[in-house]
Image (cartoon, rainbow, N blue to C red; front, top):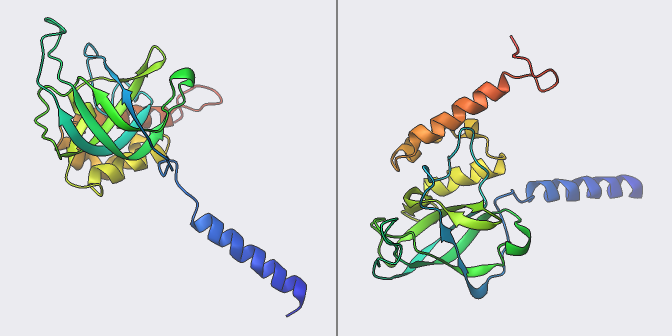
Length: 210
């Protein structure tokens, strides 16, 4: 075997290794700081969870973590909602939408007053889904903080598939059941229906294909 052929085979092998170890979009490396990200609660939004809007609003910040603190509920928001501060220690970040000046800065801890009525305890593992509102991260309600059994929970694998496929709900057809257990099956199916309708539209003509 001549040197050129050996060199060519080496290049092919290295390219194969690089492709096989290529990270997915949800496989983010974050070097955490010991700071806290304070996220507001958009309590007036009608939906929460990962599948909101008619065709799926873009997720802005998604991570798993452990509940480390839960404060007592207060009446600070008057009749609007019952605030309860909580803190989650972030374990793994799966999605970061760049919000410019307010972009996520690798904070190790997440804080919000959305925890009232979530039936969570200190030590529980959670999947957290945030959006953005007026240039900052926000969390829209109870179904945006989901209790999970482990950091290898089926919900984690499913949300990562959703992120890796640019939020293609059709890739989650086999996952409707696991989301239904969290009361989110119908929302996922609605987004899937929208994706199916979009597949019928020819982007070049904007006409319905036959």
